[in-house]
Image 1: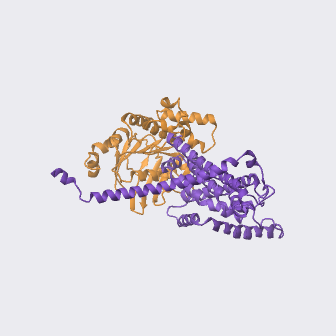
Image 2: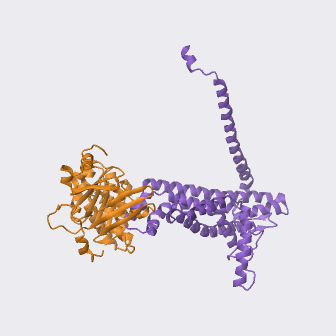
Image 3: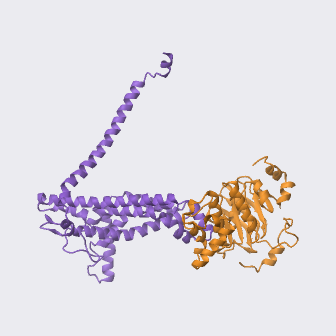
Length: 275
Length: 312
C-alpha cells in the first residue's frame, strides 16, 4: 500500500484516543473520517471518525441495529456487495483512501481480513479452506503448506487439526470452525483484522482461545472487534467505542469507558439498563 | 350422557359422508394414473421386448422398415442430443449466471429474461419446429449459402445442426431454471467468505459457486437431454429424415431420429401389420433411453445432495 501520504495523515489524526501504549503512538493503520452509510431505509451510520492501530484491539459495542456490522463492512468495502448501501466519507489504510477509484477491492480485502459472526467454512477440506485466499494468486505448494501451518498455529488450531487437514471443514466443531475462519484470514497476512461478533455462538473455552489468539496477534496487526458481549470488550480490548443508532457515542480506553463513562447512554448500556 | 351430548355433533353423518366421498374420489383418480402407466408400459414391454436383439440395435432398417434394425435412428438421436447439449448447457448456465450472479438486484433485464424463459417453456414443440425451419434454415442457412457458398445448397436445408439448435432452444428453459435453482441453493455466506478473502467476482463463481452448483446444472442438462431425445416435432422440419442410407458425419447432414422413426413407421409404413413388432421395439428403446437419462439425473442429484450434506 502507498505510504506517501503518511505524514500528512498523521497530523490529521484527531486526539480522540488517550494514549494506551505510551507517548510514542504508532501511526494509525486504519482511520475513518466522517464515514457515513445510507440505505434506502435511511441513515445507518452517521459520521464515524476513529482510528485503529497496530498493537491494540479496538472493541466496538452497542445494541443490535447500532451499525456496528455495517461499519466493519465499510472498512474492507464488503458493503460494495449490497447495491442498496451508499457509503460516503473516507477510510484510510496506511493513509491511503480505500474508496478511491483506482483501489483494487480484492487486494484491499486481502489486507483487511474479516471473520464473520457465524463461522463459514467453505465446503471443502480444512487445508483448502486455509489456502483458498492464497490460491487466488500463484504460490508454490510448499509455501501454501507453510502459510497454512503458521496461520493455524496463530489461531491455536494447529494441534487439533494437523492430522486431519484433508477432512471436510464441516466436520470441525463450531469453535474450531470459527478459529479456522480466523486462521484462513491470517493466512493472507493482513494488516488489519475485522471480527464481527466472532464468539457470539461459541462456548467459553473456544471464546477464550480466540481472545488469547487475538491478544498475541495484535502485536502485528490492528484488530477491530465488534461484540455484543460487553464483558468480552472489557476483558479483551484496549480501547472501546460505543455505537448507538448509527452514531459513535463514546470512544475511550477500555478501562476508562467501563469505569468512568462520559456519556450517560454509555453508562446505561454497559450497566445493562438497556440493549 | 351429558358428556356424550357435549361432543356429539348432529352433522357428523354428513361430514363423514363427505369425507368418505372425497377420499374415494381422490383414491380413484390416483388409481387411474397408475393403471394408465401400467397399461402403456406393459403393452410396450410385452409387445416390444421380444423383438429387441443385438441385430435390431445395430442394423439399418430393411425391406421398407419391416425388417432390420434401428441403428441409424439411435445414432442420429445420440448425435442430435450431443450437439444440442453442447449448445444448450453453456448458454443456459451463462444465462443463469448472469441472472443470479451478475445482474443487479431488481434488474429490468432479468425480469424480461425470466418472462421470456417462462414463455419459451410454454411454446408448443411444433412451433419450435416451424421456427427452426423459418429462422435457422431459411434465414441463417440460406444466408450462409449465399454468403459463403455462392448460392450452392449446403446449409439452407434440413440438417442435424439446425435440428440441434432448434432442440437447444426448446430445452433452454429447463437448463436455465435448473441452473438458477442450483445457484440459489448456494448460501450467500459462501460468496461473502470468498469475497472477504480477496476473491474477484469471477473467482467466487469459478471456485465456490460453480463447484457447488454443478450437480444441479448437471441435473438440468440431463433433463434437457431426456426431453430432447423424446421430442419429434422440433426436428421433423429441421433435419430428421424419413430414411437415410448413410449416417450423418457432417453438421449439414440429415439424420434419422428415434421419435421421428416411430412416427414414420406408424403413418407411412407400406405394411402396417409387419411393421408393428419393430414399432413396439423402437418405442421401447426410446422409452428406455429417456428413462435411463432421467434415472441418471436422479442419481446424480442424490449423490450431490449427500455430498453437500457431508460438507465436502
